[in-house]
Length: 131
Image (tube, rainbow, N blue to C red; front, top):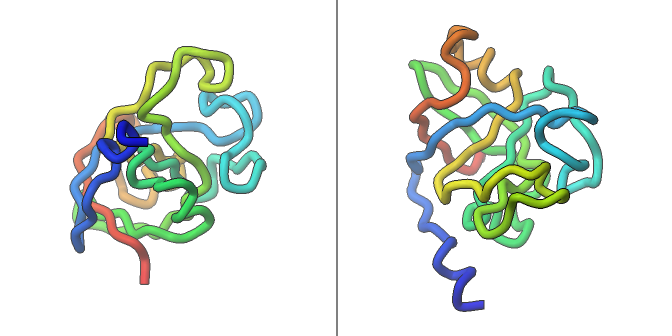
């Protein structure tokens, strides 16, 4: 339990993070269905996975967050965890653990932020809980 506290991060009005790209569709690089609703989600829907500390034991499940970057903002729904504690197994599509500062986003989020397709993959952003 003490180890999990390390991953909980303090929120500010605009928390800095790294935006990464993920597919939440069946057969996509997200692996299995989303943690919050046990469903897959279209890449055309603005959805995200949050690092373990921000996911905070599902406390943000199906809530919206506002992501800001590139002079734009987009609202996206939290549907999954980007696990910062475990990885490299079948449940995590054999991917390594996530860093502690990741908002892992669908293609729809990247499009809404107006990021050119050839620059998708890693972007400095700020985010906050949507009001």
